[in-house]
Image 1 (cartoon, rainbow, N blue to C red):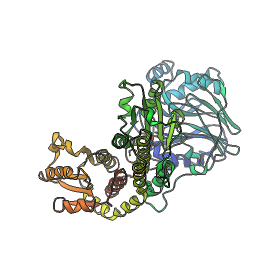
Image 2: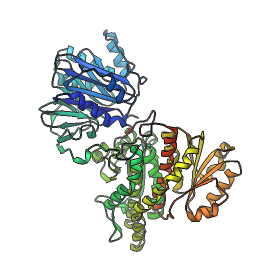
Image 3: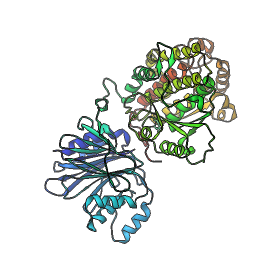
Image 4: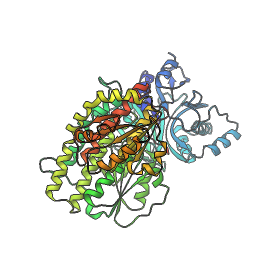
Length: 606
Ligand code: F6R
C-alpha cells in the first residue's frame, strides 16, 4: 500500500525514481509525486493525481538531480488530489510516507499553534513539519530523524530529503516495509526491492523500528533505541527483476496462465512424487498440534477456508479459520497445543502481521505461508512455508491463491501422515492427485474462449450470485470477490445450502447465478439449489464437468466444462474458471484490470 523509492547519488536520479514508481504502481495508484535535490540548490517537486503517467507529464526538465524521493499513493487521509499527493514539503524538508500516523491530529494542532501552515489534509504532512522543526532547532539530520520517530505513533515507512543535503536520503520503518539497497556509488530506499531491481547489488532488509541514513557511499542503520546497528547484506537476486507482461494483455491474464508452472514449482517444494510422500518440514510436527488457527485476509483467507475442509477431513486436525482483522481484536482464547498458520502473498498485510504477533506473544508456534521470502511475516514467524508463485503484479490475486492452496493441500497430507490418519498408500494417492494439478490446470485454461463468450453477456449483469458446497463454497466466495474487485459487479458468494435461509429473496428474473457444481458426492444437493433458483427465474451458469453437464442438461442456461476432477485437486483446478470469468467480464466492461479502482496490492495499513 503506497510505494516509496529513494535514491542517493545517481545522475538523473529522477529517471530511476520514476521507473521505480512504475514498478511499484500496483501498490497504490491514486496519485504520485517526486522530489529531487537539484544541482543548483533548491529541492524541486512534481505531483499529480492519478497514475505515474500523469506524474511524468507534470515533470519539467529542471526537475533533475542525483538525490531524490518518490511516492505512489493509496489514499488513507485526504482525497486522492494533487494537493494531498506526496512528497509533502515543510521548510527545507520533503517527505514521502506509507502508513497511518495515528496521533497526527495532536501533532498537527501543536505545529499549527507554533505558526506552521499545512497545505494538505493528510496525516503524513506532520512528518515533514516535525523534521523541519528539529532541523530548525539545530539538530543534525540523523538526530532530527530519530527525534521525530520518537514523536510518531502508528505504522509507517518513510523517506525524506533535506534541501542543501545533496547526497542524503533519510528513511525509517515501523509496521510497514522498507528496504535499503546498495549499488555502485549509489544507495537506495524502497518499499519493495522490485523498485530498484537491476540497480542494486545488495539489499538490507530493515528491521522493525529501524532508521536509515542513506548516502551514495553506504547506508547507516539505527535501531529503535537509536543505536547504530549492522544489518546483514543480502544479494539482490536476479529473480527480483521486474515481471513483464510478455504477450499477455494484462498481468492478471499472464498470472492466470502461469499457474500450471508455478503451482508445479510450489508442489515440487513440498511433495516427493517418486516416493509418494509429502516431505516433512523442519520444525512442523502436526502430531504435537491439537488445533490449528488459520488466519489471513481476502483471497488468502478463502484459501484458509478451503484448507479447513482438507485438514479436518484428511488429518482430523481441528482447524479454526479467521479473518485477520477480526481475529486480532477479538481476544481469541488459546489452548495448550494450539498453533497458528498465517497466509499472505505479500507477507506484509498489516492485520495478518499483527495477528501473527499476537499469537507469538501468546506463545503459539507460528507458521507463515508466504510468497515473499523476505517479508515481515517470513522474518517474524517461527516457521516459514513458502509459495513459489513469483512476483504477483495484478492487484487481484490469482496464482498466489492456487499456490497457497497447493501448499496447504500438501500440509494437510503431511498432517494426515504425522497424525497417523493416512496409510502410505492413502498418502501416495493424495500426492498423485496433487501432482496432477498442473496438467489439469493447463487443460482447464483451454476453456478461455467459452468464458470469453459468456463474459460478454455477464458484463451486463448488475448482480451475480456465486454458489458452492464444501470446498467450493469458499471458492464461490473467491469467485464473487474476483468479480467485484475487477469488474465492479455486485457479486456475493453463498454456501448453496444456505440460499433458502435468506439470499434466495434476491433472485428475480435474469439474476445471474453461477454454481460451482462438479459431479461429486454432493452433486445432487447442489442440483436442488439450481432448481430452486431456476424456478424463480434466475439465469444459471454451471461450472461443472462432463457427467455434471449431462445431468444438468436442460436445467441451466450455460455451462463451463472443466476436466473431471477429484480430491484436493478439484478446487485448485476449478479456481482457473472463476479467475478467467472475472478477468473476461472486466475486459468486456473495459475496467482497469490490473489496477482496479480504490484497491492496492499489499495492504500495509489496517
Ligand atoms: C484479492 C486480493 C486480496 C488479498 C488480501 C491479502 O484478489 O488480492 O484480497 O488476498 O489483501 O493480501 P496478502 O495475501 O498479501 O496478505
